[in-house]
Length: 384
Image (cartoon, rainbow, N blue to C red):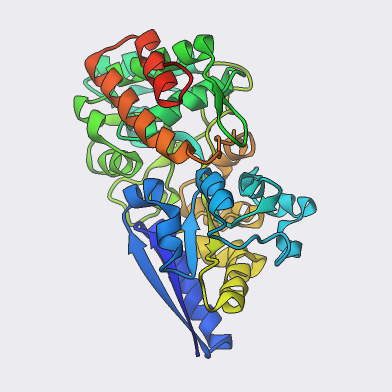
C-alpha cells in the first residue's frame, strides 16, 4: 500500500476538486491511500516551501516559490519525468500562461491544476439599482465608484498582504512597465508606472469601506456576498465558487478594467500546481496521481463540478459550467489569457510578504507614491 500526503489550502475551490479526484483515482488504484492536509491561505502564500516538502509527498503551491524550489531542489523536476504534460507544445492545454509560470531555470516544477488571476467582481443587482454600466477602463471604474458613493454604496479592494502590492504590480504590467526581475534578483521598480499604479489603488481605496484595509481576497468575496453596499471590486484574485447558486447573493465577474490598452491585460496570474517532494518515499505514486489530477479526465469536468477553477483550458469552455458559476469562465478568460507572470527568483516570496506589509502601511497612513516606492526598493535591495 502506497500512502501519500497532499498539502492543500483552505477553501472549497481548492479542497473539493482534490477530494473528488482522490475518490475517483482510488476506485482504479485501491492500493494507493491519499490523505489531503489543509493549511490556511496565509500559509499557502508565504510558508516556507522547503519545510513542507519534508513532510508531504505532494505540495500544492503558487509559482513565485519556483526560485526557492529550484535552488533547494526540494521538488522533483517534471519535464523529464512527465514530458507529455510539460513540453512547450503542452502549454496550450493549460489556461493562459499557467504552465510557463512553473517553468523556471530550465525545468518545470509543478503541474497546473487550478487557473486564476486578478479580475473584477460584480454585484449585478446593485449595478442594476444604480443603472450603471460595467466598467471597461479604469476611468470607468472611478466614475462608477463616485456614482456608488453618491448612493451610499462602495467599491471594494483587498489590502491585506500581499493583495495591495499585487494590485499595484498588475496596474504596472497593464501600463507596459512592470516590475523587472531576473532569475536571480529584483532589477527595477519603474518609478513612472509605480506612481501611476499606486495612485490608482489609493483612488479605489478612497471609494471602498474603511474596513477593507484588513481584507484579503477571500474576505472581500465574503463581504460582497453578505453585505448590500459593495457594488464592484475592480481587481482581486477571484473565486468562481462565489458565483454558485448556494450563495445568498451570487457574485458576478468581469474582465480587468485597466488603465491602458489592452484594458483587460496585465493582471498577476495566480492559480496553483502540484509539486512532488524530493523527500517522498513514494515518488512514482505521487507522480502518477499528480499526472491524473492535471489530465483532461479531471480538468474538463471534475474540477468545475466540485467548486473548482480548472488549470486546463478545456475546463473553461463548458457553457453549463459557466452558467452554474454565473458567467465566471466566459467573463474572466480574456484576462487570464493576458496575464503577467510575477518574479520567481529565490527570495521573491519574502520580498512579496515584506513589500505587501509595507504597501499596506503606506496606504493606511496616506503616504505618497515616492515614499512607498522607496520602501520597496529598500526591501528589494535596490536602495541602501
